[in-house]
Length: 104
Image (cartoon, rainbow, N blue to C red; front, side):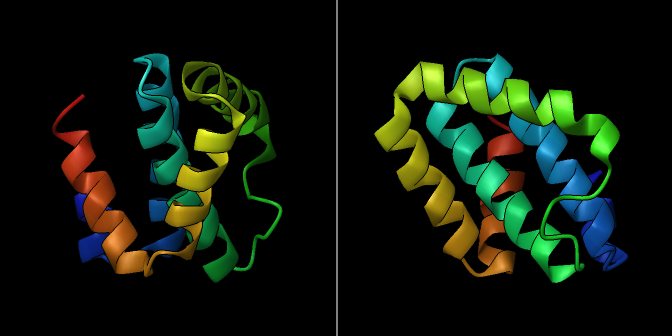
C-alpha cells in the first residue's frame, strides 16, 4: 500500500498507511521501530494539513500502538525513535518504513 501511495504521491494515504503499519509493528513487539514509523506518519499528517491526525475513527488504533510501543521499549527510547521519525526527511522516513515493512 505504501509503495503504491508513494507512486501516486498520495500523502494522505501515506500518512494513514504509516499509522497502520506502526500499529502492526507495535503489535509484533518492535517498539522502537513502531515509534519511528509512527513519527514519520505524524510528519506526513502535518504535511497534509492534519496536525491533530486525520481519521479520528482510528484514534483507538493509534492509542494502542503508542501504548504497546512504549511498553516494549520504555518511554525514553520510544520518544527518541518517534522524534527521529518525525524529524527525518519524509522520503527517508518512508524509505525506512518500507524497508521495515519487509522485516516484521
